[in-house]
Amino acid sequence: MQNPDASSPARRPGPLSGIVVLDVTRVVAGPYCTMLLADLGARVIKIENPSDPDYVRDFPPFREVEQGRQSGFFAQYNRHKEGISLDLKQPAAKALFKQMAAKADVVVENFRPGVMARLGLSYEVLREVNPRLVYAGISGFGQQGPNSSLPAYDNSAQAAGGLWSINGPAGEPTRVGTIIGDLAASLYAVIGILAALREVERSGQGQLVDISQQDAVMSLTENAIVNYTCSGVVPGPLGNDHPFVRPYGRFPCKDGYVFFGGYTDKFWREACNTFGEPELLEHPAMQTMEQRFETDTYETLVKPAVERWFATRTKAELETMAGDRFPLSPIKDVAEVVADPHILARGMMTQTLLGGASFDVFGSPIKLSETPAQVGGEAPLLGQHTDDVLGGWLGLSDDELTQLREGGVI
Image 1: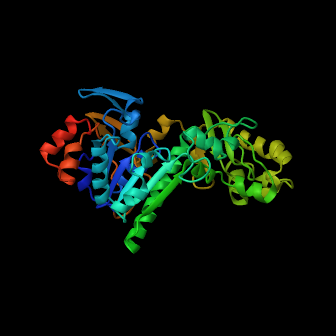
Image 2: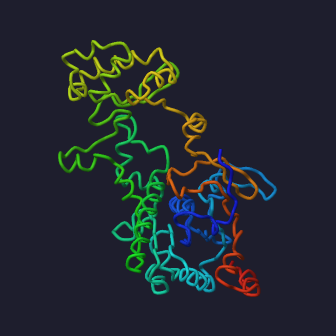
Image 3: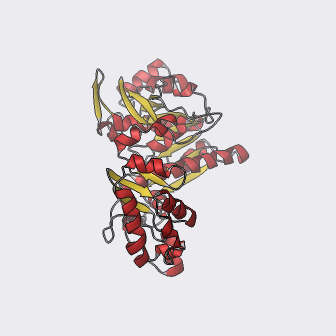
């Protein structure tokens, strides 16, 4: 387990050091994006309304510490950020935000399209303040299009993007068991922001990065789109099956389930030899991948053989037997994943602090050899760095900060 690095985000080295990000996001579609930028060294300033902060501060799990109840959910997506409180509905706060945008490199928001415009803080307004500004808007349906103003959650994107319709047991559409729309949109936002920052380096021109959760989910549907446009096939849920390769899916074993992907000729040959049935390689109905995919052959010959191989062996035994010969992975629950020696060796577990509470969370999947992401650190309490950011970075005096606080602006 890596230890938290509680040093100031502004002082952390990294490939994005020197980049300042104003984070006006909440929940996950947005906070995850800015957290990844912070892991890579950007200075991320999270802006929350003092009377209506990011409501995942009240999402479980919790730890009770001296500074009150702290959310592990919030901590997981907000490490390395500086937190300030600012009520953007107030004129003084709008003026402060424009001053910050003039000095910043990136703004990320995940309001419904039109909200920032009503606040007088749209991209069109802010680019007049800072032509080099990269402005990323993450929303359910994007900044443009007939559905852009619709409210949306992750499930909205899974439903409207086609993923829900092809997931789950046969004949029963099922949502993916995580907030894939929020997460995918955050990842695409990072890619878009990095590309836009490269353009700023080249031309000095900032731009709008428009990320739709529906778009993001649609792009994750593998062959479903092209299969329909080429063949007219509207796919439905396949459960643990695959649309065009077999064996490739979940199979029971002595103490649970494994994934087995022995569909190529090479992997099928290795599996037959490993499990002591080389004679199957000579069966005239199972000579090719195409033959083994055929439903009758698969159900009567291939699948029974695989189930026979696995029935009396544990997940660990099967994983050892497979080695590097063919793809076979135990289907692990979260407890098994957290304890996985390989996960630990790759630094994929770390600690995040929040108000004195420590949470074990996932690390960064981005591995850079020379400037690695720094994943241990702190998430901010509400308004924790307001004085540091507005005073130290923006240059406001103590008297100005006092007036802003007394007026409920911060």
